[in-house]
Length: 256
Image 1 (cartoon, helix red, strand yellow):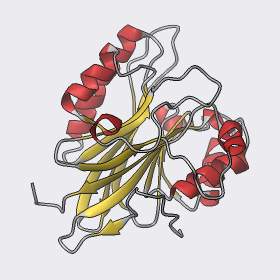
Image 2: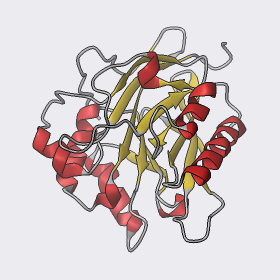
Image 3: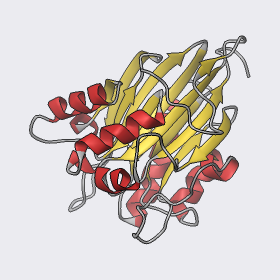
Image 4: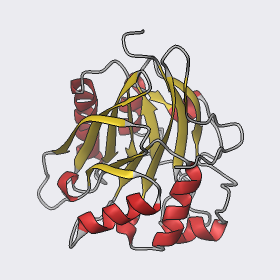
């Protein structure tokens, strides 16, 4: 895909030492129930290498809808959707997918089924674990799911990984703090763009985030503003969340 470089956020590239600058997008797309064309425009304008989707289509002909979004965004489907109960991963052709797995989490009766979409990818000389999540609305279940997220991230077996998604929790909450105690919260480490992930006019809060394991260098993370070819009307029409975009530098495999 043709990259659209945002001001001050590094473009995707492979360094001479084999390390890779990777653009990661996290986006709750509300099952594509809104303006699909606007949604695809927003994703394309972010020029991501990896997209961690939440609330991907899960029901009738969900694979067809996921394929449409990938195609219109200039990406390819990797894993997730109905098989992960909502989380999904898309990638550019720059990412070589080594393996992928969808994980369903223990379900509390009366609450929605939750899951993780996970993958191991190689970009340039760098290997990277990826996990997309959408945690519970209920505080106690959400906190347990954060622990399962940390376990699953470690189980990917790579020194470098990212986890991104809709946490349904704010930075001061127990779940958010549990993740930030072991992972780098991208916005807190290197803020870029805007902080709040709710649309203009909605109560301002940051409930969507991109985390990285120690050793991954966060070059910038936040809600992009001034996306080329994207209007504020597009952001309002695409879904009920704003996208979170990060650029990270992943060391080459074997380096620490």
